[in-house]
Image (tube, rainbow, N blue to C red):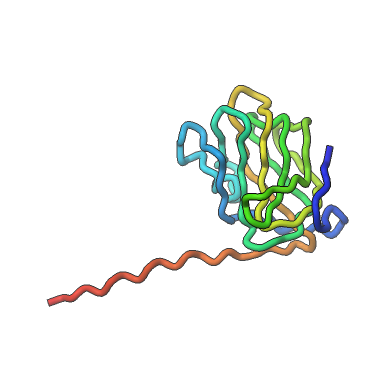
Length: 166
């Protein structure tokens, strides 16, 4: 089951660039509060690291795409601890969410969803786990109409104070 969203997508012009790769990611929880399972590992491009959540429902993983982008496809690379029911949601502000896809037929492994929605933020909002464990994603990939991506400027470090040497 898919629900409506805004924008255009899934129309054959879906690009090949993963707009989420390397972008800031946050999550509702991390398995056992272990930083080696934290959200950024779901968008690092590695097949050996992952985000894993606490063993409870609901849970979410969100990515800041850096700009409002027209999303046309999401690829979820689930570990064996996957969502049996979840939504893909987009937001312009990271607090008000609009569902662009919903399913009650999640599967382990690679799950590809053709979607249509526009937002700066995108998240997987898990409502039911398929196992007793939490949710676990090797990768959360996001593709946009025309393959557009945005760059998020890195934070500048504060300059060090000059110290007097004498």
